Length: 203
Length: 298
Image (tube, rainbow over all chains, first blue to last red; front, side, top):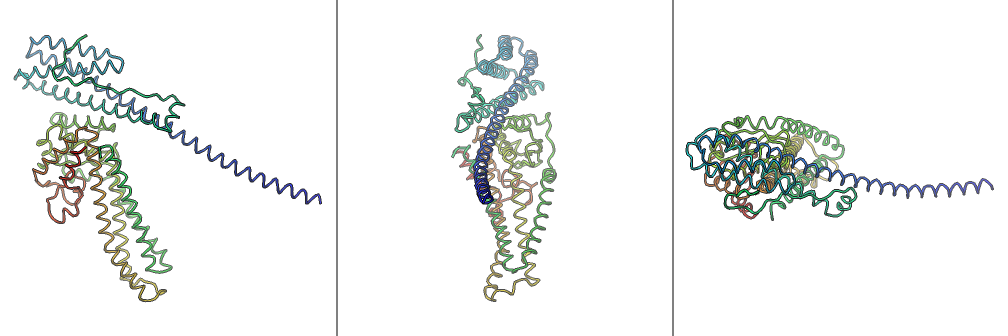
């Protein structure tokens, strides 16, 4: 008789344990899924944010390239158009301002100014046919034009990355996780209104 | 549809097409198994595996050596900074916009306006443009063309088309095996004579039609990818009118690209072979007028 009760109790124990097993199994699976989801979304944010940093670094590379090309350009143009002193001062000042700009807003403004002064310089240079024919000038013109274009593309890539990142941090359910790990929104690299006439540099 | 939607929709449709392809392959295997009867399943799977292995080997060869082959067939030579600064700067700029490494840059010695890109992934890619394109297109138009080609690389179209070509080859091989098997006396003795005959006839028709249908599907995928590359390229260059105007110039030009032949035609930017009934039916690119229309609506 003892054996019977013993068998019964063991039976209940086994059923009870099996039940607990199923519940805990389900709980474990749900936990694993949630954790995996968190990991995936978190990693996605990291990827998007790194893309932004990379795009920003690209902008800097092109800005530096332009910075390095300008002295050569000024020297070449001076060789043929010595009396355009105002222009040279404007370009140099804008170049310095670009180097000193720190915040996104400052850089954006300084970039527009510098692009504007360079445009004026090239516009003025068209009046000097000998300068136009100079090989060094032609090379610099192409390189600067290419670099301006690459700055524009780098800004585009930066803004595209920021858009993707901002979208992810705002849309549900990513917004919850973004909040958890403090992934904040980033700013766009905006332009001022497009100037039709050459930009007047003002400080 | 704006440019952003186009790219996404086309990607989805391409995968749908590949899915249909796979169904055809499996269906063929099943039908052949039915026709040959019980016990033939092992042989069928054996031959299918062989066909699959051959296809994989072909795929690996074209995957790793495909770009070198394409470049040498078209006699492309590398561009240099001294003579082609404009072209090189454009490619580098667009690579920055696409956030991908700069492809190797080549030029094709041909006077027609055309271009192609090749490479299994963005890290191992090359882009080539004809001398005609460099001469006849302005900066915006050239960048439109380059953006289109780089979109192919960015969207992994080249890899996609390689997979598609494998599947088409696989279907062709299977149909071939089946027809040969029939000649050497296949067909089971289990079922009644009439239904068996119907199956065999159906099988033969299928075996002949399947490769053609597969080829048409491959071309449909290719055309879809061209539209997608047009759209992604428009996003990259932010100037869909650039590519539209380049296409208009090609229309007016009408010169055949001499360095292409049927084998490489699918890679080129605009259909390089001259217009003709068969060339159009089996065209790898959508018609120019339709592409221009879509671009102008972006």
